[in-house]
Length: 114
Image (cartoon, rainbow, N blue to C red; front, side, top):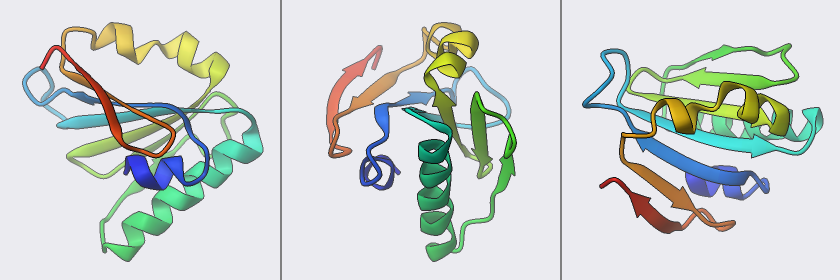
């Protein structure tokens, strides 16, 4: 997923392994967009990748300017505006869970709490 997001210039891509502390999913992917148009492009690239791999998903927040969510069951992808990411602050809420940061190419850069 990080490479698909990076292909559309997603900002500050991370994953959080919540499998040990969550009963509803295993992994969050979180990224930021720089505009509503950019958020839509990120949503489109993710859903295209999921469909290509025959993964079922549900999209929440299609009309939100702060956040879009793609729920794939074991994986949830959050696409935020800058304001939405600060407001929801999922990195802080799930701060004890292992996190991985990705670079602008979608490559792993840093693992925290692993």
